[in-house]
Length: 248
Image 1 (tube, one colour):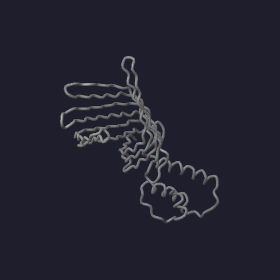
Image 2: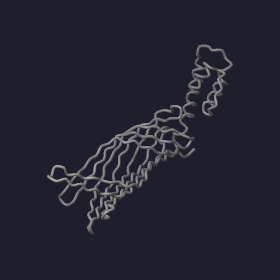
Image 3: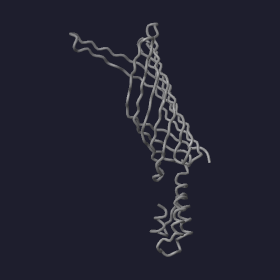
Image 4: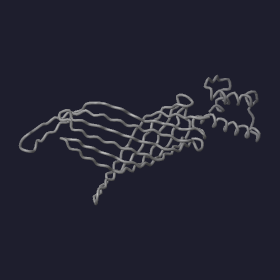
């Protein structure tokens, strides 16, 4: 883009540091020369220039850097439920109020094995606790998943780095019900995968805001003695987070 600007606009002032570096280098080669058909020497110089532009544009996502990302939410709220039975010959309405705490933490840690391609591990931990305000009945769930991920940054579009990503995870799920002095507990195995695309906008050379949209598939397998049950869930997800790249 800076080569095109210098050819057409020549004297245009450019303040962006990365573009300015490229513009100055091109000035040194061509600004004071009349436009002529490209020779092999000029083609070679032009090719070298494109390589320099590419290395500058993808400095945030180059080989040898560490990749760290995080997506999390923490909430505390009060809700209510209402049940009606209009078809039983009599109508009864009961209202149950409860409070709940929900926590979700999803860090990524990876390494750029080549330019624009980080590979690493992710952890997904979710916890929820719900308490009935009337009788203190408690319902708790937690699940922990870990697995590999791979992300590929496609291009640098004016500071936005669009990408595609895939991940596969394995883990465990636990559910506990406590009511009237009793306690029931269930455990399941988790298999999950997620495919999608997104974009990172780098605020600095190392820190960026991240938006991801993808298809998520989760499978929960419960086994006890001779009994086996599997539940599967599919959904579209939108995640917001922060990306940090570390290294040279």
